[in-house]
Image (cartoon, rainbow, N blue to C red; front, side):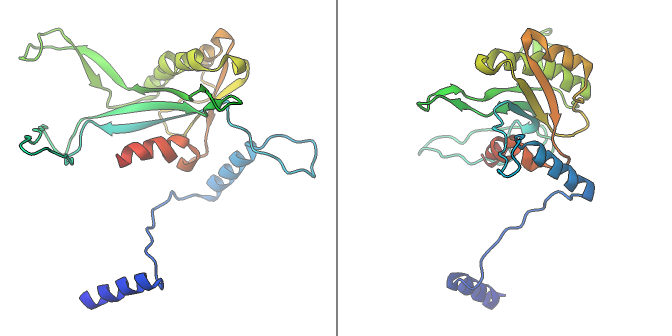
Length: 240
């Protein structure tokens, strides 16, 4: 085994072989492949001239939303301590069941003026799925009746709808650039079961207030690579 490892390392240095990591990818059926292709084609700008190549949409009026579970802590964490500094004391009832909270994030493409000054950051917000409940008993930390914030462990369609109507839509309407508030704004989501459908009546009623036209748009199934949150923000947080 030692001889084999030495041979492999030598061939890597010689450039004859190279290391490569291979990640599992979602299985795509023929129907899913067609849906992905149709979705990509829908992102092309219409053109009257067939001889000129069509351009992709600027995506300025698209907002990406997605949910992500975040654990309150990790089983093992790295610290850098000064000489004589005590190691942090962390406790948890069970290492197998570390508390976690689901967040919904909403981002859009940022905008800049001619001098590259930021006009709109594209950061709509991050919204936790939590609820407040009065404490039933007194403890050394708080008296009975004190409101405690707890995580919602089962996120259903009704909870998603409530978050969109009561938190996401007001954030969009308050932060969206007024210069393009008259345009149709698409909120792109994946096809998970808790998500509401684009024709949900309660959402449509709330999305057309204050002269806004906000609509839901579903991305193709098994297409995590078509959401910038999975490609960027969530991946960075996961690496941290």
